[in-house]
Length: 298
Image (cartoon, rainbow, N blue to C red):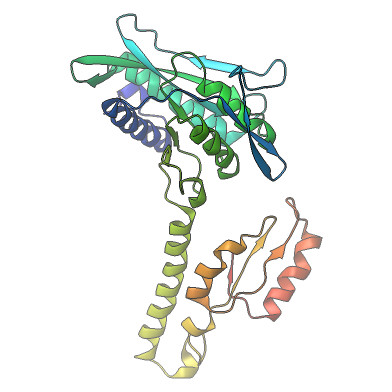
């Protein structure tokens, strides 16, 4: 139970904290602690290579920020979790994850008196290395964080894109890493060192699409039994049969089309737009989708 002085904070923070406590307990009980093997994942645009590093010092720009938040309870031993995060610029998702982690660690160390593992009481330390929100820096930031003194396991930052590279580095260093900010399923495939709290994006999309189809089918069932075809909300064809799906995005997710086709049949080609699309850019696209009888827009 969270103490009263922490109750005003958001449910997200509490949820993240409670889950992190459970994960920390599991990792401690299993005594998982793997030493880095000094192989660096190097990201160059979309390509990834693995480079031996005799110094075990992953190269980072001069002045790269490193942040610590530690256990200040003198009688407690402490475990340390570390990982990449965006420190040098405002990235709301990354900031929120750090703040939730700090709230949890302060509560764990000061209010709860640490974790109980057998007869031992253990506090927790946090450390982050700045990833600058750049794909070419994320793997080196991860490597540097995981190789800090006395790091027991890693924690990933925010976003599936960046965490995908961090996951590769955690596997190269054979270090367990947890993620509370990435839902792309491929991050966790074939990587026994990486696991996350969020449901996979494929699972979320399945639930979303299934709900749409279920509602449309329910409306058809209700009106079929109580009205003539001309009075039905979606006309004679019914709502279920007139579902038409399209996506507008700056990064089209064509890999989801197989899932979408299961629910909606033929899928309209993705309409790609710029990240900050203007009304002028969107208006002709929306007209085109309307002319193609699109009823579901993502």
